[in-house]
Length: 193
Ligand SMILES: CC(C)(COP(=O)(O)OP(=O)(O)OC[C@H]1O[C@@H](n2cnc3c(N)ncnc32)[C@H](O)[C@@H]1OP(=O)(O)O)[C@@H](O)C(=O)NCCC(=O)NCCS
Image (cartoon, rainbow, N blue to C red; front, side, top):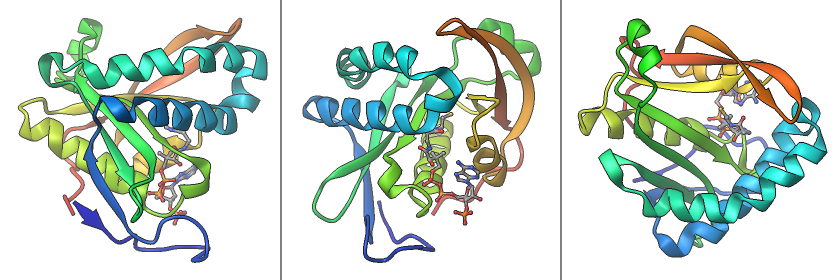
């Protein structure tokens, strides 16, 4: 899928067009780097740099496993620019938390969605999320849900793409207690591009 962003605040930086494709084993190191850089930028203020340092060290192995694991329709889609340089990804698959059944049921989940900071706010995140939602639905894994930290501005992003908050949970991370929120797509489905 080749998509032209609807807006670009700085046309001299970042991707002008982008393409979404399935990630393969050789993409794992690049995806790990995107995850590490994006986490540092997005979560340093929320979680503290010490906790992030520890998480970053495990990103290589994490993304290698994510790309290799295709059980139940799990997969990773990446977004890349005209030169084939990947700058974001979405990891999705079956929703496995049985405790969520009462609110749903939700059969599909977006596990992770990360855009390198340099390429954020250019429409690629919306394109990846919409692609992920419809990929899960077409694989028989709809409705779709995901989790997002309460302190994360991405909550507004998900609401803008039609997500509806239906629950919350307290979690511990790096010695801190935080709240994460569940968003679902039942009826207000974003139109595929
Ligand atoms: C959240 C994220 C995936 C969004 O992707 P993106 O390509 O930057 O977003 P888009 O350009 O498609 O944004 C569309 C709209 O969503 C809203 N939005 C996007 N990111 C936002 C943020 N951090 N805070 C508030 N609103 C946001 C805005 O209304 C935006 O429109 P605008 O740029 O015209 O104001 C991306 O910014 C990202 O990876 N952020 C850091 C990591 C993260 O939080 N991931 C989600 C974890 S659950």
